[in-house]
Image (tube, rainbow, N blue to C red; front, side, top):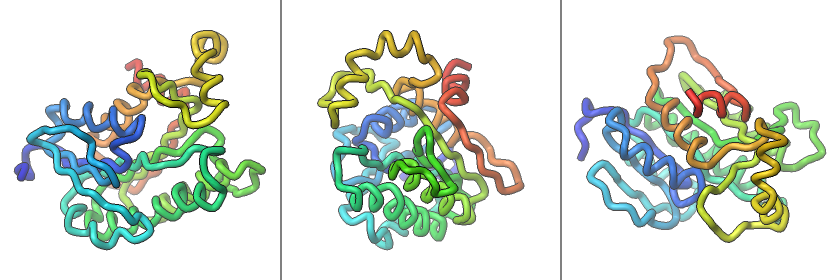
Length: 229
């Protein structure tokens, strides 16, 4: 077990995903991080003295995670689903229900911890958007902001470039990857590398939180600026 004074203790949900995978590796390399707990359905395949892997299948009920989530400093929630790759009901379940349920148990177990949510560009907290993705991300943002954490970071990236080759989840993602070099030149603030996004999320998680409650929304241009600094 990592000593409590050895550095920040981070929880990463969705550690086998594109962004979560980079977040795990970067966090393990950070001297400021004393321990990393991953929560997911599949093992990460990573072996490291600072890593504690917890396998959990049912994110509709996170009650069994209470012990693993105690005495943590921050959670980085990267679990998500791609629009067009799943049915609408599943998209809402993963985007809203799973995030809110995990946050409930995490706050009960580590009430002073920071919560970071991987949202998306165009997220609509008003619920008026015609795009289901935007409505669901906005709904999740509202619930997490009201969950009582001392600090909530909302990351709203635009197109996340995978960096490493992968099987793209939808036709639109295959197109975006193919035209990425041109798209990046024309719309620089509409793209972010997956590794840069993960690094900014980990960096935010190890910062000291102000005494007053705060919600920090980072749009794609803000994330790019932090990644470049």
